[in-house]
Every structure is written in structure tokens, then in C-alpha cells.
Image 1 (cartoon, one colour):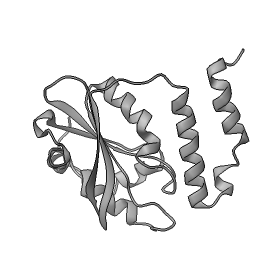
Image 2: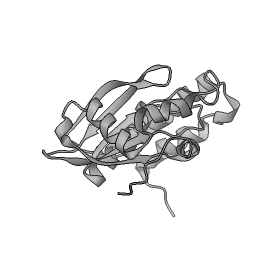
Image 3: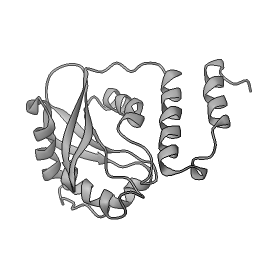
Length: 180
């Protein structure tokens, strides 16, 4: 089967890049950023209402975060998004396209936040950052309203998304017995 011509450059970039596991953490992060930028460059743009860069409290100080809002007014469900990356790579910027797609597809507010990465910040640094942001449903709703410049746009319906390894610390964060 022929390869979509728009994907040829992306596939070439992936094939030419050294394995992330062979690089230092800093270099692996840069390679991962480049690959996600390359993937975004061959993807169709995703139209949403607005994007806001903010800072939130983490376990040891401020963390970068980004709030994605869909078009239109009114309360929306909120998703607290924790990026993947083996606890070592990834950041808010490298998951921008995924968060835009989520915002568009669920018609909800996405709050994507960084967390401290290893090996510079060994376990339990990332775990300590998670509850500060969205440990339980009630804490998540309060937190989402706090970080939002439009608190009325956020509802008490808050979920968390933790791709890849970050699911591990989902079990460490306090949970609410309430289900949505």
C-alpha cells in the first residue's frame, strides 16, 4: 500500500532520528519535541476557541500549564491532562496538538500541565505534583476554577487523562468516591 505523500517527511524524520533511549535525557527531550513538531506540521489544524498559557502550583513550586477552551460560551466539562513520556521526556508544548484535538472532540476545557521530570527530579517528584493539580474530583473542580480566567466556563464535571507511564501516579493521587 502506498504511503500518504504528506507522511513521507514525518516517517523520514522518525527513521533518521536516533533512538530516544540512546540519548541523554536533555537530548531525548529535544528529539521528542522535534518529532512532535514534525507530526503537527503534517496534521490539519484544529480550530478551538482559545489557548492560555498559565502557571499552576506544583509540589515544589510553579509549573507551566496550558488551558484549551472550545468555541462558544457556557459551562463545559474539564479534563486535567497529564502528558506522557516515561517520566523523562514530554511537556505541555509537545502535547499541544493532542490537547487541541481533545478540546475539539469533547467540546470541553483541557488543562494540560507539566510535572517535574526524571532523572533530575527522581521519584516521587511527579507524583507530588499531580495531587496539587487534580487529585480528587472535588479538588480538580476547585483547581480548574482557580486556574481558569473564566471560572463560570468550568463545571464540577472534571476528569483526568494520564497517557502512558503517567497512569502509574494516578493510583497515588487521592480519589473521590464520586463518579461522573
